[in-house]
Amino acid sequence: MSASRRSGATDELGPEGPEPEREGPAGSDLLAALLDGMDAALCAFDADGVVTHWNREAERVLGWTAEEAVGRAGFAGWAVRSADAEEVEARLMSAMDAPGRQVNEFALLTKDGRRVLVRTQSAAVRGPDGKPAGVYCAFSEVHAQIDLERSIALSEALLEDAGWGVVLVDADLRPAVVNAYAARALGAGRTSVLGRPLGELLTQGVEELESALTHVLAEGAPPAPAELWVTVRTPEGERRRCWRNGFVRLSSPLAEEPVPLGVGWLFQDVTDTRQGEQEASLLRFRAQQLHRAARAAAECENPAEAATVHLDFALAGFADHALIDRVAEGGADTGRVRLVRIAETPSGAPGPSRLDGRAGLPVLYADGHPALQCVERAGSVRAGAGSLKGDAAREWALARQWPRDTVHALCTVLRSRGRTLGAVTFLRTSNRTAFERADAMYAEDVAAHIATALDLAALLPQEG
Image (tube, rainbow, N blue to C red):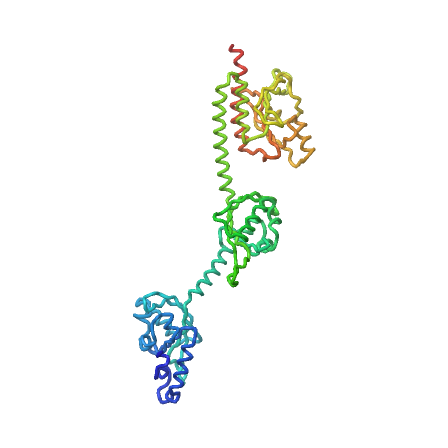
């Protein structure tokens, strides 16, 4: 029989005298039934801290029966570790002198020795004279509550403090929740991106991203993160970024059958890392090309052919066309630099560079041509069609006597033994990006090898 139904149990929390006896056995049984029917675990203590009530839910949670619990002085040595007993008892009994309910969390011990984290609500029990006569305590396991609080805390942390982007995308592939990192990456405010199609936020890469989201909705998360290059549309202009993405499918936990709510999209910007890796890989490749070119050029009997070998190796992955122009003899006497075409790559079709049969005839470059500027300045000059498109871009290229599909150019001076020999021009079509400073440095290395070969070609006949 539960101790909440023991005769005399209510006497310990009530005044002395015959009044409890008027309640009779039926009253005690009713109180016991009420206590045992509660979903929360209930116990009570008298003013000295002795357990007076212990219901069935308390038995279920901790394993101690009412017969084992009632009559014990506090929880020390059985329901609480000895080291914690004094603190737990003090906090529980403090409810006698405090108004309202007191809420605490304790680690209690089960009968088999396990620790159970419980949340308690305790309040004073007062006698007819209004003075505290004891304490009642309701407690329950808080694993579910703690799990919920942890989930909420995790959600808030992800949406506020996470060092990666978190976007909840609905079934229509539109952002429903966006954290601060993702908003910065998308170049917009956290609320301004909500409900907008991804195509309004990204100019490139949106098809791949939407395809991945659609796959996750239909099939579930991919086995590994995926990297995507995207172009973000921002008020300051477009930005090319590389994101490492992870996806999880969100389903309603309340439905019997999984109902997709959308996709949890997590990403991190790895642009700097990827660009660094690409640059390192490019530098290794270019160094290998220079080494291979030097070995191949060493097998050429004609030094002029060795110059074209260097040109061919340099073009791989670097440019689409190349020209070599040499300063015409006697050009310095006229006060005007004249350049003579000695080698070029075929335009419009693949093939090796060839020595030009027009050697000796000056190229009719207009004043201010990038190749002339390159020679006059003894440095590299970059040029481009800029915003010109279509026929305007073709006219720009033809006016400079370059292949009509040229949109980017890099002219690098050829120098050997302190003398300017000419210029080498590298040309790119619209399929490639503009030349950058790193490209100019590589072109200068190539130009040094070409200049050495040309200078040797000019010396051999004199030595012969």
